Amino acid sequence: MATITFYEKPGCANNTRQKKLLMAAAHHVIAKSILIETWTEQSLRPFFGSLPVKDWFNYSAPNIKYGEIDPNAQSEDQALALMLNNPLLIRRPLMHIDDVFIAGFDQELLDHWIGLKTFDTTTDLESCQKTHLKSECNHE
Image 1 (cartoon, one colour):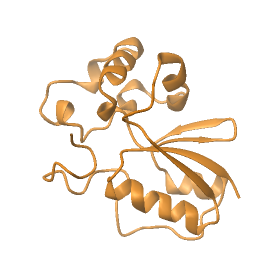
Image 2 (tube, one colour):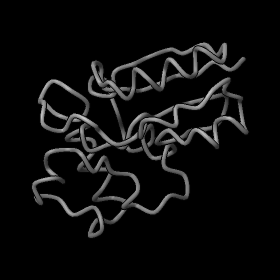
Image 3 (cartoon, rainbow, N blue to C red):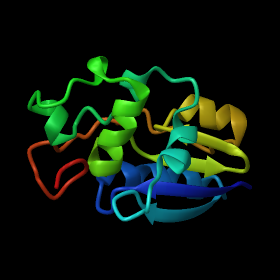
Image 4 (tube, rainbow, N blue to C red):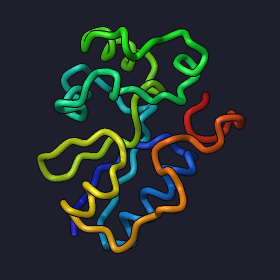
């Protein structure tokens, strides 16, 4: 059993499904709001590890969907500054497990590392499925 600090957008249906999968595998999930966390460059950067900067972003965030921000055109410093100003831009969930930091929900990776009882193969657990509803997932 792992203890997972799970940074989510409260009310996001995918984050809810992700937490349920983790809890079904007997992991202890400590859910925190990614939106109200006091992020700094030093606290946020470890979650992205060696991922390319473009993979740090939540592509369902309104600023990206409407072409106001191009994740492919950002340096590390620019990306972090944007995310500190607007946490909706951060790829979710962010997870801290032991001394490891992860951005996004890769079921296969998590199963190999901490174990999952089941996989949710019916749903894309990272992309927002309800982008037309402002109250869901990645919207304001």
